[in-house]
Length: 336
Ligand SMILES: [Zn+2]
Picture 1 (cartoon, rainbow, N blue to C red):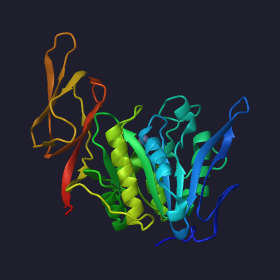
Picture 2 (picture 1 turned 90 degrees about the vertical axis):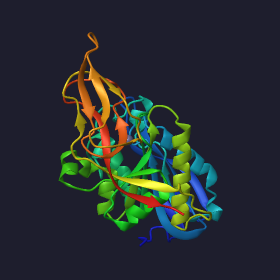
Picture 3 (picture 1 turned 120 degrees about the vertical axis):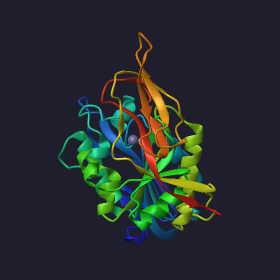
Picture 4 (picture 1 turned 30 degrees about the horizontal axis):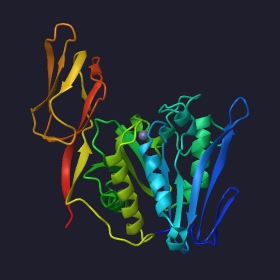
């Protein structure tokens, strides 16, 4: 059920006042650098000719995750506000400080911007950026797409909260071949996931998903195509754009094992399976070998049947470090 923020003739984000049938670009001031330069966040608001839901689309919450920025550029090209129903709020580079320095975290306070939502008005710079975006845009949206990327050794997928049917529907319609059902549980709180945008937004009645599109720090054309098709599907699903939803023949639903697969030895981890591959219980996923003697120190076995979601990008591992993420197959969505 839409909150109704998109019903009025104009949609204002601070001094950016957008009339029906208009699309405008602006910047929101979050603070200043020591030399007085602004720390300001680029935003694009498309206020459709017809009133409808409000969709918030964000990229680069982590500074090195550039694929979502390119997805938003294509979305900006595609969207004609004259033909749009509802309102799209786009933030192509949420973490401008990390982006400028080509790092994941926010430079200066070294925070993870996706652990501090909904932020604080008078907090550190990450908290101020989160507060600005949350209060001005996210809290007025009905739906949310938080575009992230993982590593080049990760399967492109969508993370969502499976117990909520609206979130599940968004995850399905986005159309990746793999989706990961991520519960809001105690483990999540231990990992500070309670400050994650998607979780915080859901508490405010904003249903969202987190697409993980390919690897960071480079444009991954396949992941960008999947991401753009996904955003288009969502717009059609929400009645904001006309068109046909296109989905793969089947989508695999994974639940992540709460026990991560970690190294018992130090050495080099050489994987023997590919991300996206289905594995049976006890199957060898890879070996850890000594970089001097080349002795095999550990054979890493699949603790249960499932699908390999990702590997550590760097094969150099110390004891206790994560090796891979294995998902339990919860179900298959068939699309005909
Ligand atoms: Zn990210």
